Image 1: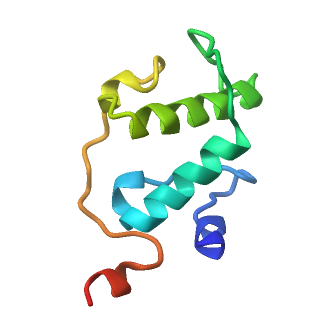
Image 2: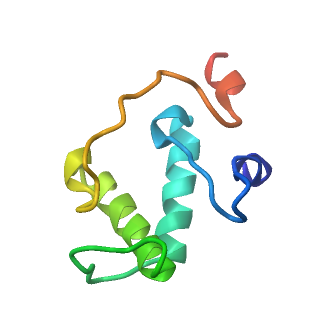
Length: 101
């Protein structure tokens, strides 16, 4: 999983995009665990400027992971989000071969 995640980076070092909905349930859980552990925070500011305050942005990511697990609707997870991105229905990341067996 770690190697696959690193391959998802774009030309900006350390930046990438992953749609949690496309991962296997096991990998969804693993990624959420890692995000929550790495960037845990208790109080979130109302707005975040990702380019000026990356640490707070990653704390927001941790907050979103926690709220997702509590069943919060996706449109309530991020105060900076304008709209939901429709799911593509793809299967991404390792482990899907084992899921179909």
